Image (cartoon, rainbow, N blue to C red):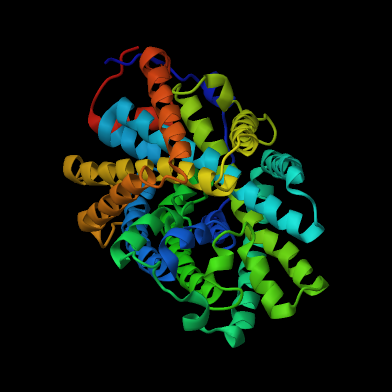
Length: 475
């Protein structure tokens, strides 16, 4: 099906400007900060189905997948340094339909991920202040309000806050690791390593979506390309330094959390697993509560940085006309995509609240997590397909950084992501949410087929794709 374009004149683009600010430190903090909430909340839900043994295997498999993924996007991002990120990679490799479908999958991931995280923040704050579960949506609303406002305030504020809260979150985890060591007894607290009657293969398979939560979000960094001073040099460094940090953090957190009181069975169902660990280390008094409150910085770091991500992601798709173009207008002085930020937060809060108000037996956070993972793994598969196609179709394209794992790494990432996608539909506790996410995805495709493809704009990502592919748009 054909697509139709309108030109992007100087007046159109002048209303949609971003400001450059980030360097390697800020990019590293954005990458680690986007993910680090996974060490505080979310991964633990998988222990119910697969136990510690399944989780350890699943984390190892996910580490291999993210190595392939991160090296691939570290190559593509400096070669195509646009705010569209995954959408711009797929747009160049596969045309407008491929770009939109990839962007839609990533959009679902980035809108739902903060909703998962804010549920975790509500759980920690409720535990610290002793508020009833009915208050949780109020905590969510306050968090959205504060951190959307910080992102609207300016890119400088966004990156400064990311660096500070990411460093604090890492410090909190360091305190936890050191405090957990004297209580560590893996055989006592994590046994049985696999649920009775469940082999390691099945246990590991059902844990893949939860293990992915320990890395999900680092792939957002290409969305900051137009706000980086030197994306061709700094973007690969920020991505890969962040990945190394997260590998170390993930294994330490999983192993030490499960190998200490109150044990795997208790933390498997908790919205605040690290708080349980601090109670073991420091007792039930005020010290544990204060540390749990500080532990919220890990969730806040991810919440704040992924709000940045969905703001830029909505902005880029809107600027190119795939989403309504009014969403991409930025504030004249601060040059932040305020409309995109507000729209994404409203949608994420609405989904979390709808699930909260619907009678169901599974935790809201776990349902949302699986919905976000659905969007993420779809986006991963499409990004790796883009990487392979770019290597095949455009071998002479300038690549300031070249992935050392190449097509092999991308293929491994596709296999693991496809396997993870399949497991989402076979977990009866959470698959209703995943089916809902799939319906959302199909409705988005229907919107583009009926309307969006006739309203495209020659934004920077589109111009770059046409130039590289030696094609001319239909205007």
